[in-house]
Each structure stands twice: as structure tokens, then as C-alpha cells.
Length: 109
Image (cartoon, rainbow, N blue to C red; front, top):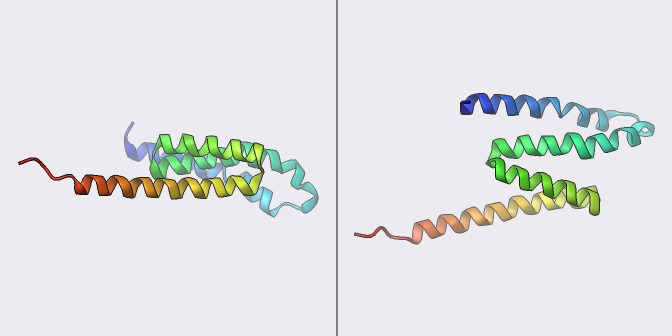
């Protein structure tokens, strides 16, 4: 499967699973408890998986989904969002450290 095909499939998955989130946001307040489990434990993990996979790869996507489900289940929605932000910060720091290490290595002559 080519990279373009894989991106197209992931993009469509991402768009389709965003529909329940939109329904959750714009539904009447009385119906929110009906949408909450589907939005938190089905739609959001699939959105995170497809979005992170397109952005940074499958390993980062799996870590992001596991972190989301664990934090949401154990600590709540707000903590789950903060954990995703912390994951992005940790990834950025890791990439910067890796770039500095490869930059400081000089080729053997």
C-alpha cells in the first residue's frame, strides 16, 4: 500500500469519527450523558490514533491512544487532555535531543 493511499484512508477515518464528537458538542444538554461514553472511549481514541498516525507514526499513535484511555478512565477528561499535551512536549524534547546528538557527531575522516 502506498503512503498516499494510507494517508487517504486515515484521513477518511479521521473525518468519519469526528461526526459523533460534533453531535456531542452540539446536542442538547439533557442528552449529553447518552453521547459521553461513545465520544470518550470510541470516537476520541480513533481520532487520536488516526491523527497521530498521520502526524508522527504508528508508535506515537499507539502511545497516545493508550495514554488517552488510561488517563480518561483513571483521572477524567481534563487530565486526559493535559496528558496528550505532555506527550507532544515530550516528543518535541526527544526530537530536539536527537537532532543535537546527530549534529554534534562528526563523521570520521
